[in-house]
Length: 216
Image 1 (cartoon, helix red, strand yellow):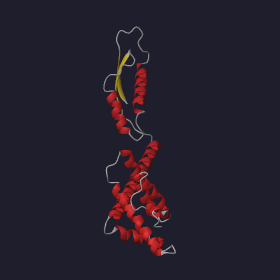
Image 2 (image 1 turned 135 degrees about the vertical axis):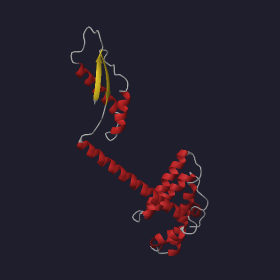
Image 3 (image 1 turned 30 degrees about the vertical axis):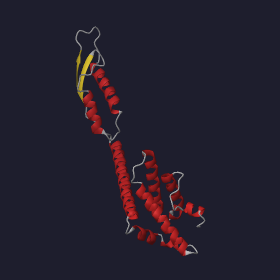
Image 4 (image 1 turned 90 degrees about the vertical axis):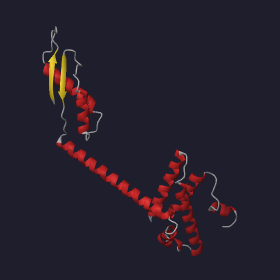
């Protein structure tokens, strides 16, 4: 840190060590400003300190100090900061790729031409696990239509809190469906999504209404 100071003239008791007073004032003021910044924000902290010191520092009435700071990090701290930045970039990249993947999946599911064929192809094994493939196939197709309706519903204007709930359920459902190890649990997540969208009122043609009508 480069600094200069001026001792106030005609003091009855002037400072005995003005250099020490100036350095102490500067150090404390710089620490007070810099603690608002993260270790990696060296340039921003330096600019803030220099902005603060652009006027004379007169915290001690016996002395006026001017200074300009130049900050740097210890090598081990700089290495840790760089590791943290790298990890943050990696997390950001992974989140971006996940968002891209889910958006592609969402677009595929709402596609009128390719959505249902993709769904059947991906979950065809589940269709033939039951003793009655026809019933299972109908259930899979019905589930697809429910998912497709839910995905389209999310594009409508809802109250903010309700929209957040619906979008969270949709993202959860997409992840469940994408992972073969959890795909079999999709029905429960789908039921939660239907409740989030319709509240206590079930959509027409829902499995619950079919059962109540005696069609199951």
